[in-house]
Amino acid sequence: MPENEESTETQDEVIETLRRLRAIRGEHRGQITRFDKDSKALMRDYEKQNDCSKDETLLKLKSSAKTLQEKHGLLAKLDEEIMKKCPINDITIEVEESTDVATRIHEIVAKIDAFEKTVRTNLRNEKSHHTK
Image (cartoon, rainbow, N blue to C red; front, side):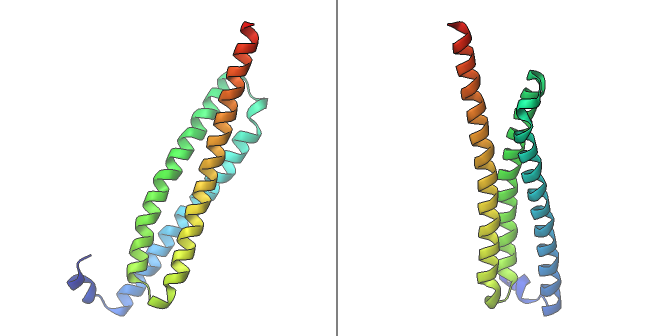
């Protein structure tokens, strides 16, 4: 937002904007929690599935990882807007919250990537074992 627009915003408007932005961020965090729980359940139940379901599970996990990475980008922009508007005393808290969410997303995506890599390695090993 250009400086002249920002300077015409009243304190009440800034507070309301911050409230709205933080609420949006909270909704995104809730979605991240759901992705985390769903991904863990998919990985936990993977071996119980038939081959077709396993392929579908891998696609869901890959899609979840991609969505989480996109969400990270959206949250980074949202955090930037929040930090522009929040009081200076709150910046440290906002940075910590932003870092916590980014770390959480990174950890979920890393778990999905590691799981997918393990599954693909196991599949290659099974195929090479069967061809011998």
